[in-house]
Image (cartoon, rainbow, N blue to C red; front, side):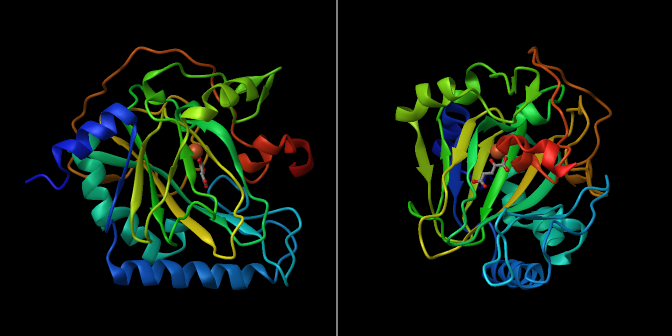
Length: 291
Ligand SMILES: O=C(O)CCC(=O)C(=O)O
Ligand SMILES: [Fe+2]
């Protein structure tokens, strides 16, 4: 039996995005929040990025200007590796059933992260397409953004350009530098078409990975925490270095291996893995400072 209506499925393929309710249980939500709050508390003890992921980069990414009084923890990379709560949601929550219904039945895990916008921080995300960071043999890839907090018009919601997943893959390289974002001209061209994805905590935004999206700073006094997990159709194979490898990358989440590979036709420049902690340094053009 389907858990998504025909309207929801059609909207996903037409617009490249849907928001679904109750993607996690109230208990899962409470645990996700509690764990993240503990990470924010821990971040007060640090002056720079810290922790270590599989490829040696820091796990905890601090916004420039972070202090113990005013923490600016903006990202936790591969939280599933260090938290059973996040691993359980990534593997077993209702969010995975929704994703499997759209691009499954069999799906694998690509990477995960928490993106946070604490009140008073400047964290913003320039417009980009996730696929340009993670080419695969086919583009049945979904970025699932789980709302750990209520997401409102004021606290820096995801902003998307509906239908853009069907359009061109825009260059994310500019003058020989992988900036992890599209040209300002492209972002401006689509600014009138942007919609903001808001919803109650526990909802999830399911986004096609070719969709053009970004987000603005949090202008409210409420935090905006998203747990972002990317899944892909089991018959897709990665074509470039994973920018956030973890011990769970490529795990089968639903279904079973088919032994097949499926290919779609497209071309793009091969992305660059960040030299700094995460794509925030690529987007800020500060890669050199983070070496
Ligand atoms: O945190 C956000 O608002 C969006 C994050 C995003 O697009 C990404 O990490 O690829
Ligand atoms: Fe993104």
